[in-house]
Length: 359
Image: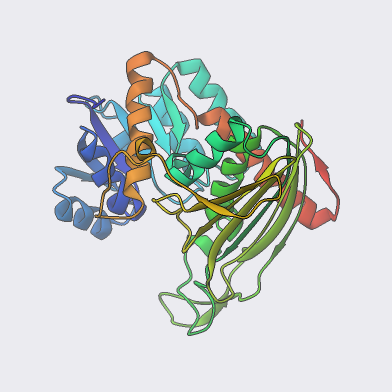
């Protein structure tokens, strides 16, 4: 399903330019305007992507009467204000993760979405990768029996060795940075997608390589946020999942194991994005591991412009469907709030040393 002549404005020109602009255009949208608070970046993004208008005032873009929707792809700090303003201006909203700075903010965004009746979704597009979808289907079909344990690892190595990387919003606590929110949120959403709501959380945040380079003075400064984390989640269905992740050690991608009373599933990925071809191994009844073929229907097309585009375009198709039907398909602002609760609980547990029970 495409969107006809609907028009969208994109807030943010980093990931917004790389993924949102081509993704929305490929699904029938007219990208009418972009925003960056930096005029040079806004002008450059508009020119390079053949977008008619650019803004350095987000509220000016949001208030335009010729837009049907707004996509928020800025750093997390302004997400709350931008999303609420857009919803109250009658716009449908797709908001990037990390969704908000706190579960309190996320709940306010959720409530305004419900109040206005606009389609409101969060960009947890990893749900739409063949690997994540197939694991979901195999669990639902009883491949593993009763879910017991899951184990996840993610080692990216982006800050391992070499000169200190540039200081950015990712190293700023006030801007909502940190590895837990940046990529841990995708994995928490995936765990909720597979296993349902979380009951309790324990976790730890660490900064193994805090050095950053100030982009103006070239001085070495210290990141205020985590580059490594671990957590354990228990689910209301009785199962549990652990995850350990770091951006400060040599990269070896991600490994996922899902264990149940009847079987086990293993999946690997070379980088932060799940493999487009599935790549799942399985075993039932203690037998040998075997490759599980990925159904072609889970890989409806490929997009070689960017490895993130296939999943994002499938998310946009759901966004389009939600607008047509007057709904907010999952992952929506309720899912985003639930994920934010877990993120907050990991941080609270790290500070207090206690296990946190969710409402």
